[in-house]
Each structure stands twice: as C-alpha cells, then as structure tokens.
Image (cartoon, rainbow, N blue to C red; front, side, top):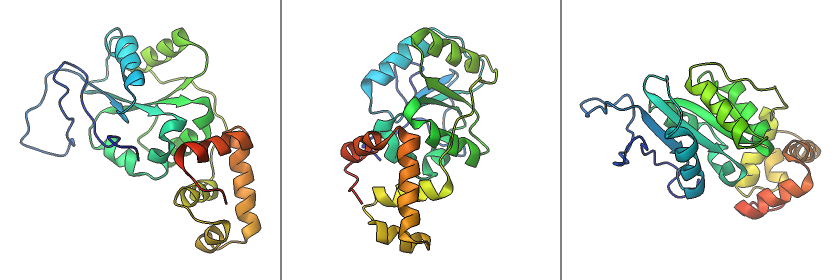
Length: 210
C-alpha cells in the first residue's frame, strides 16, 4: 500500500479533519456532510474530485461519501479486503471511481462484498463522469454494464505474484499444478488488457516476473 493510503481526511471544509471509525464513541461529530478521497496521495485526483464533485454537486447521502481512486496506480491497495473494512468503518458511502483497465478487479470486490454497490467507470469524458457521480449523490442506483470479473484463483495468483512468489511457489500455495498458474496468469493478461498491461503493472509496482 502506498504511503498515506491508509489516512482518510475530510475535505468538506478547510480543516481536513481525520475521519475516525464510526464505531468510536466520545468524539465530536461534525455537523457538515463529510467528503473524502482514498487513497489520498494523488493530489491531482483529489483536486479534480474536489472541484468537479464536492464543490459543485448536491449530496443527499446522509453522512457523506468517500470516493475511491480505483486505478492501476493503486492496485496494491486492493489485493486484499482490508481496504473495504477500513472504509466501511467510517460509516460513509463508498463510491469506486474505476479505470477501465481495473474493471475486472472492481467487479470482483462488488461480488465479494455486501457493502459495495456504487461504481463509476471513467470512460467517456468529464461530462459523463460528473453525470454518473451526480446520480449516486442523489441517492439513485448507478447504471453500469456488467463486465468480466477476476476469479478467486486469479486474485490469489495476483496477490502471490505481488508478494514475489515464483510460479512454483504459487502452485504449492494454491495446491494446484504449475500449468494452472500459467493459465491463471494468461487469463489475468486478457482481463487487464493484454501482456503489455501486465508488464506495465509489474514495472510500476516492482512485481517480479514469474
């Protein structure tokens, strides 16, 4: 996980207060609707969301929202379910802003979590993006076309690759044959947009080649 990815700060006003777990008691409650972006280390993404969404669109979500930068740059944040537990604890509605290349992973988490239900795919310009976000902030169900999802085996393979395991190690960990690991990686290549995309992923995040 990138540095600062675990911090959740409210952008609803200029104080930038940390958003505490909703389960904590005895803390002062802000009267304002809370807005946050997570992970919070992409200044340009945060600025764009603040200008296009938080400052200009009405929000009818009672407590507020946290917008998730579900992009390839942050893929290591989404390899296990800890990120969902962290964001769920805030009590805010979670909205995934998803790169097209990350759709299979986003779909995986939508299927495997009973708490995630809002996803906005960045695909066709600013106006379309703002319209989609506005729909969610008005309390309506987002419209998106179901696309392929990562499987449990593919996600496990990706986690183990990211941890530096070889194909043989992965086969032993998953109790399968090495050829099955190659098959999972081939499927990952297709779902992430081809071999070049998987090479880019490895390069960006120092994931060793198998």
